[in-house]
Length: 213
Image 1 (tube, rainbow, N blue to C red):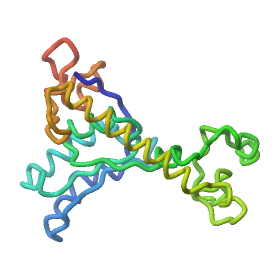
Image 2 (image 1 turned 90 degrees about the vertical axis):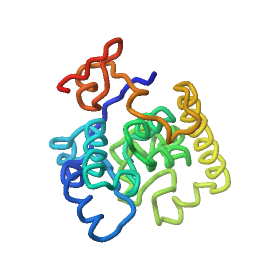
Image 3 (image 1 turned 90 degrees about the horizontal axis):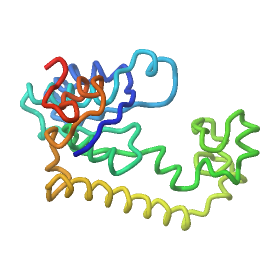
């Protein structure tokens, strides 16, 4: 069985899970995205954990008869195949990645440690991609910085990362007795803490107890 890892999600998600599905039904859109962006005060101070957000979004869509008709796409904090499997099991139709792909391309590499320090950051912690001063030459329009990126080698690394991500997620699905990732369901999950059990609405490991339900 899977364990649960908590994460944060933007405050706007509270609105998205109740208001946006209605707009989707009215406008005829086919997908809704749940995402957590950045490290800034608003999402970190008033956001809700992703584990709590996905079940709320699934419930809101189900009540409108739109679950699986409107795609629920989760992003933010997706790093490994386990993250993918957990999101899918909670009801997501798909996930998207952002920072993980940048890391695979070569961002935050230790070879640029000195340059990251000059920007007030450090290798492994830099995330001011919007500034256009990325020492790795990925999120920049500066020709001198962009020249540092080898797109062929970077493409190979991203391809390797995506293959491993997919393999991990598929392995977890098979370990749960499922032939496809989309067959994962909340019954395949257990939580290691009372908080994550309550938020994800799955049993605490070793029990059939779902706190608050």
